Image 1 (cartoon, rainbow, N blue to C red):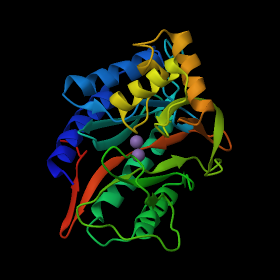
Image 2: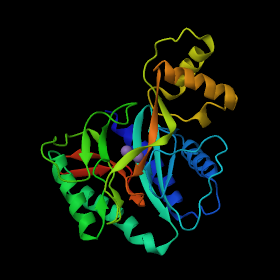
Image 3: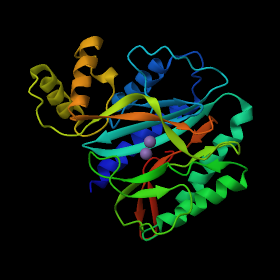
Length: 298
Ligand code: MN
Ligand code: MN
């Protein structure tokens, strides 16, 4: 593992996240939000590890702007901005919830507090199930519900979900954190009226390569090579393709790759009772005597 790269990516991601936290996004389109946040990552010398997610209200995760997306942020919205920076494939994954309506402050605070309590218990050997218990207990004490079927994850070079899950609720079994592995912890919180689960929505606007096997369609294969060269196995958005192809053509070729199973499309994730969801996220590396939170406030 390249600890220096993880730390460098973390510093960049945390700077951008703190910029996102204090900025007034009301009146901006999600297209403007995603593009601006991605540009801030690139300006600081990292690549985007995935398209910036701007998931509003009951959409918990996995919404990124379409090309010229006109959905506009309102002052009553709760927006999860989830961003990733990578240096040579070593990823910092972090998120913040922005909200300009005081009635949702508690929801945002619960996500932040659950994440903070989780971070303070981390060291080598801590059980993921115990982290889940801390997250669940913190959220319930504050009068809210954790989302049970969303979780944190291990990270690896060019791999966001590297196989291990850090739950947001107590669960039987699971693994223990290893020294010098990277993980992301990301509590998601909904209201007491929420079901505490997410379901797949219809919209799919985040994609990732599945296989580099050629489709025998020359144009689609050109896109396949472009995806591999620019994004490796990491997620991407149609916005990132239409910089090279026009929107109609890019979408058509992407659909061919999806049909051929060369590319996978990820659906947005929606709270089952339509309740609002808040999120907070850090990337960290456990140590014998504590933790390096790579995305902590610098
Ligand atoms: Mn994330
Ligand atoms: Mn994550």
